[in-house]
Length: 193
Image 1 (cartoon, helix red, strand yellow):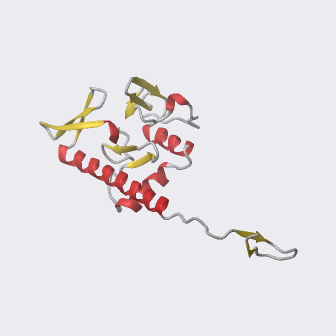
Image 2 (spheres, one colour; image 1 turned 90 degrees about the vertical axis):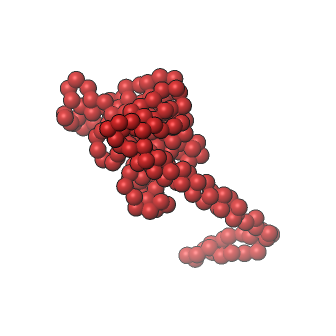
Image 3 (tube, one colour; image 1 turned 60 degrees about the horizontal axis):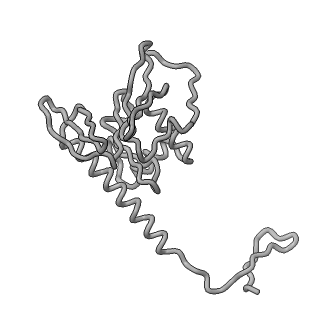
């Protein structure tokens, strides 16, 4: 495998992981560099970046990072191997890895586009996708379904947290005024005018 030197991925619409993203596939070019193919509901796009870096760039564009997404997922689900990650909570974009995210052969599947899983011989699984296509992955149907269950659990818990915070907002009954006196270090809470 060949490594790129001083590679920095710039974000643009072509590289966006959105609601129409079905999966992200690792793909080696003729020189041995690991790249990505993003499959959308309407086609595919080749990106000169590893899937891990592509996802990290998308998360950074949204104000997070791969590390933050992995740690956030672990905080909610517990420290697990192959945790799903949230790309965009408001849009419901959750990706789950086919294997360890640190392995170059990891395929990332969008939870909302997985329709059904079928067991195949040789400990392989066929995953039917929302666009009528499919992918055959190494691993048992049970292991992929466990990852899907974890992704649904992550989605559910994130939505529950969102509802708790939205319902817990208070409306102030009394107005107030905050003022820092000349030479003071703290603001004083004064009754509203």
